[in-house]
Length: 231
Image (cartoon, rainbow, N blue to C red; front, side, top):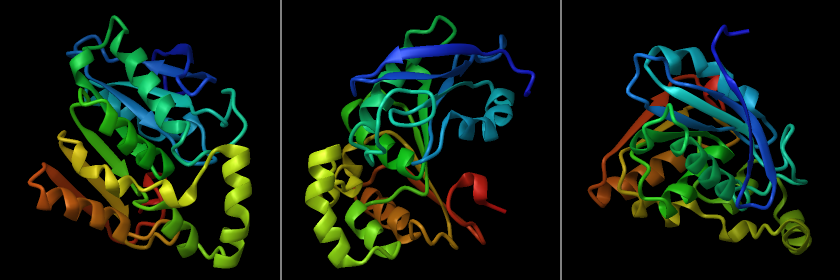
């Protein structure tokens, strides 16, 4: 529909699941720069197509895939960065090995849960040269409270969720690793976001700035949750 060349992609993720998606190669005049797009919870690879023409006009290839437990990929649950961070590492490695890609110029763009997963991935893979993080949460337990889930329900459900899906809500805290990433980082957040409150990006940016790490933050007036819900 976008009149862009693309390849069907299928890869085995370190999460143990097979991922499926698309790769739009960089234009022929490009130097091989490429973005790995990481969609949000309960979304799919299609979310990455919202910006595909923009990436292409700026010389980027784009890898957009269904994370495990989403879309056409294998898996059973949204695991709030536990499996997703492993998916991201596998996607990055796939992109680096593509003949049209410069492996030193594979960057990350994640939104919502995908942005938080990207933070964990980049804290392990220090070759990532830059990240753009849209509406990431800094602390999953806090986010769950802020979206209106009663505390008593969270405490009752937490053990079952940990056994069934491997998620320990109180241990998923991207803010604890945010200063381990030396690459330049851009935070993007809508000031009207009520699913992940804007302070999450602001607090992580503040930690990085205090450590002297290259960091920018862009607050979108009137923006709700995620780049495809901004004015």
